[in-house]
Image (cartoon, rainbow, N blue to C red):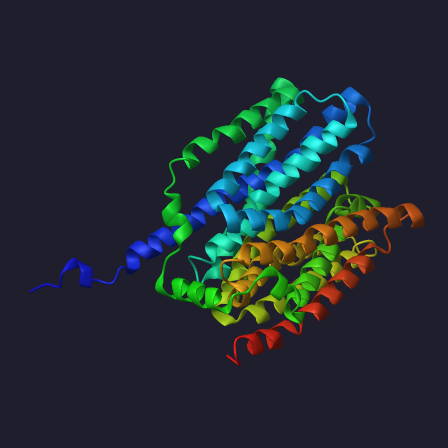
Length: 418
């Protein structure tokens, strides 16, 4: 006689649901990264209408980066207290409202508030903090891979939404484009109302549920985490990583142009970095799950540092093959640390307060990135060229590596020597 249905292990239904939740997070991350990064399309039309300097207009990027970082603890608190459903819906409503208000703006402070502030806050709500906390309830051993898939939205969202937004600006103008984006963001709320959120929030998979239960017994709170050196090692790693990467990336195109590379080719290299990053996020997430997360992070730091060395050679040897090699190597490391470090943090701090803990950790990315972006441009103003830019980026990456090195030992100790 065949076994009754209840005797069959429910592995396939769990697997399907876990990766369905991953797909949901990917879709929301794609929207979050897309709405945050498309501001570059609006620089020229807004400059033409208001006459604001392009540097002043681009200042909205620093505000957005800072808002995402400083908003991360709030995002984590909302996730823990009110759940992902409320957080995601608030994020989409904030994005829709920000775009609609921006379509009628007349002053610079409104631009900073609506696009830098509100869209930055929406990007935080639809970003890595919520996805890390939610996916930690579904994935145990494959958490790094799942977060790597979600982080691929960083490049794909830009590749998809940037040309679409440019088409809208060319056909209906920048104000009309903001209105369409606002209505679209609000429209995404409707299908989310039909998601089975109780199932999504509950988590699944025997090992993931066991890990959650163990995290609940450990009773990690934000205050307790802040008193550990492990927390500050995570914080320092993300701070200096973001500092080093943003110092170079936001100045990469003008750096290459100053080195004698044609502007169109320089922009293409920037785009190739983004393409390489989508593969790197998935690759390093998989390497972390398969061969060890500490090894994955160290290899990614090696790629980023090698990329900085290569870009430093370009002013002296502007060969096309060197540009391509730089884009592939440096791009592979872009964003690669975030998913793996989130997975490492979940292994220690997983539990009912993990959203707040990972949110506070991720303030490092916003503050470090904003400082790196500002300093990279300011040093050019002081020195008159970009010769120190690779050094600045390299210093950030070396400090990030030094901050990370103690983490494996801390992790083994926290897990009882495992």
